[in-house]
Length: 260
Image 1: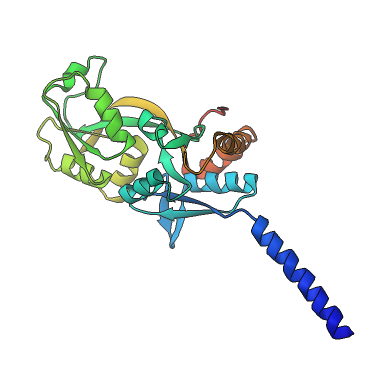
Image 2 (image 1 turned 30 degrees about the horizontal axis):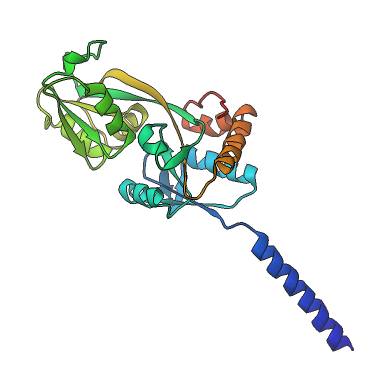
């Protein structure tokens, strides 16, 4: 009798566990790149301000989220194929919207031209001053897209796309882009690399574009309504001051709170 009752109880518990496991949604899988100060790997785990905000948003949605740090080209290819649920950091461009629901903005940033120290150049309203110059940039990236926009219609500009930002800065510092060479980078990224790599002989030469970083949600995995719920979670974090608090230790500016 007791044996039969125990078997019945165990059966009920196992059935309940099976139903619960079937009902629990699979973890959302995101990929990012080594992109300090925004994202990086620390002790084998994804870290940085964008990671902190994403984890808070996932908690708000009551969803488990997994984040993997990969080289950008591999991460972007995986995300564009729909092999993962999302990618960051991304900016809101036509190229990104083709594959992703781009979330509401999270962190404000800017693209800045850099030159060799002592170079008599400051970016003004007349883009023709870029004529004849060589400009290094990391790509494929939002920075490379911004450079295309910057030099559109300017003749004799040589754009050199490099595999990473540190290569861009090292070549600029070494004069590899010529005496009047320039480089376009995210300003915070450039300053972090200049500090961490002890680079010298570089100076900022003018802001090109103010923009914001966001999360990209795969269009093949997220419906429009699911993307709106993700945005609502980010908006709630922003409105409560939680986003600003998460970014404060990194000294990075939170974007204004927006809804889609």
